[in-house]
Length: 329
Length: 295
Image (tube, rainbow over all chains, first blue to last red; front, side, top):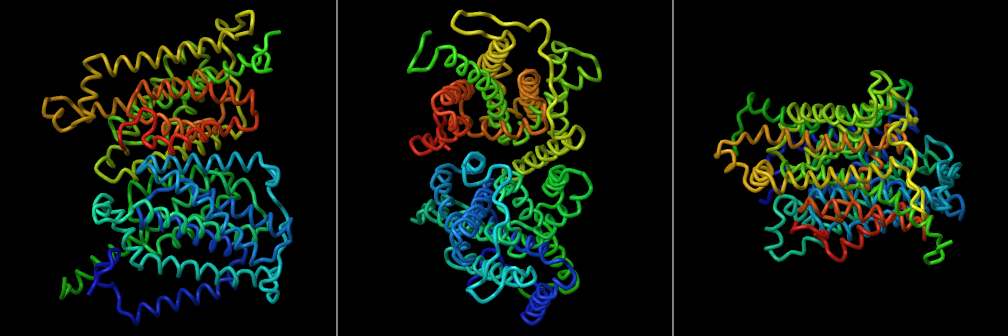
């Protein structure tokens, strides 16, 4: 039997309870608009996908990018431009956003992968800042105002997206598909090689694999999914703005992954809920988001580096071991 | 009027001047980053925040304490350096044994928190800091008018940079630092207090950023986001120069500042992008950086 590198330990709970929990989460996601207003939920969903996409490179390939806002924000602009100015339908405009994210990811990747470790991080940050400056100066982005009043169209000419409640379910389906795709990638042979690169890059090279190509593909996939998240957010809020390209967003999404649990599939989703909620509750308080985000960041690095999900798993595992010692190792 | 490539000499030299000023700050900040990275193996994302803090401390000393420019030029680096030492002792130190990722994220969080804190207290708007009386006025060089304060900033930062280089490369203290960079355990075995050296190095690097902040206060607006907008460019400078050599980071900083100034004359819209474009070119042609050694 082969063990996957990220869950080589025996599963915590059996298959039955696992599906029960999953069904609970799905039920919660379907019923959520009854309790919380849909636009907020869509925002949470978009950031879940964005964080999970970042985690694909950060958690599973060990590449810390501080430039992911560029893909997210640029895809937002691409969506807004194509949907509003060129009058493209929803599906095409979203695909265009994804393509722009992937294209930028390819450019970033080709440049940044030439260096490793902290240099990689600094290069992604610098390239994203370059995209930010371009967005400030380019004529079509609308500068400080952004592209406003992006129309909401029809999905495949059938489903009316002007109803935010309907849009929520459309986004829920798309984001779920994106997350399933990430899960598939992580568990594929490609995902295993990424994990090996994270653990020992030299070793993977010595096995005759082209490390740079694997990293580049992971980076482009991550950028494309970030673009998908950015395009969906632009549709929901009918706005593409400079804020989504800024380095603060890159930082916030890293925090989502960190606080949820780097290298876990559920962690980024939990982190996204948490960080978006922080932003929401601070909006009325006058306290700057960056102050709170920064302090949470530091607390997280100092106190629980495995994140909510990682620490919870660790706690449950040790608790279970005390109750029932494992029969097998 | 004298012209070069169809551009009046006064305009050209004015932009080179601005480029040299920016370049001085790039050099001071990338020098501090290189010193910290060399010994601690930490990339200090909070460097820009400490630079911003330096400007605010200097503004605060004047506004609340009535202390002028020269006093704050001496006091601010000490205050900022002490804050840096406190941060290193209480938090950064605990992460040395772990993946570099965590120290990077910690300093990133600190940068966000400091920027947010200052915005919370003082608002997003800028505060102005007057040019000290002894440095007001201009030199008339015939082909251009040179404000004395700007000449002072360029000269002072050059002196500081060269002094820092001399301390590291030419003194016994610097020799110990370099030895600790190569092999900390061996240096500990020789009876040198390496943990204290790490704290002092971080404090010194951060104090350089604070000093840059004091010098920047009369030129730029003192504002919470002055650090973050500068530090990202400095990271690009560091990628271009490579952090292997102290002199390399000084030269790269100044050269890129001037190049940026010249771009402003010929392609005004591209000037903000200059450093990033150079970074991409260098990465494609010479991935290790101009003065870099290996990875």
